[in-house]
Image 1 (cartoon, rainbow, N blue to C red):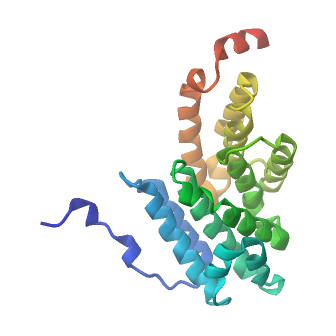
Image 2: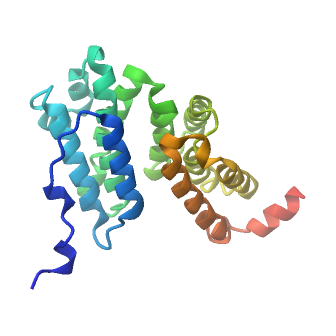
Image 3: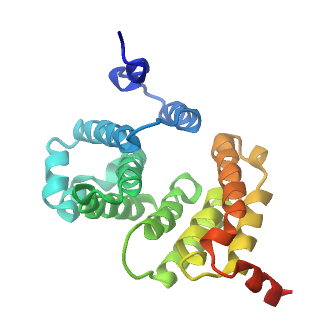
Length: 242
């Protein structure tokens, strides 16, 4: 009998698309409604491998080079191809970064953070304004998911730029900062304010990212319901702010 977990095997289907925007919509729609019940990192690592495969069509050997020396490998990506390559760098970095974030106890994945950093840094070098600040928003998300001391100044700079480029229409940017900075600093007032700003974003104002914002709204409500778990003495902080 077929294992029910093997009924849906989208990774075995290869879509050859020329419209990256439509491919992006399919990818986001899929992740918005399909949440694997076990080993989520495998889905993200599959996306990472697809990203590397796409990049290697222009830069053979990129995957091995990225593993060996991330900073040097990303220099292979030329500025003359930024329009094509920046989206690939972003989605490849995002896939690997998500795999690491859901597998924090996996040392083999954790040591691959330099790969994520190198891919993201090169994308920002090539087109920092791409997709209305998505790269800067990812910088904030990444900073909040890796171990070590927070560089609040750097995170805030990326957050401000993400909000500026998105014209305040990305709910995810506010949530990323809330989780990356407000929670570690146990700043309940700031946390609540950011959640409120995320929920105030009109998902219909940006049709291209409507689903992304709706999913962010759902996460915002979940975070709001857990404020007492995330921030100690959240009630006391709220009383002081009145």
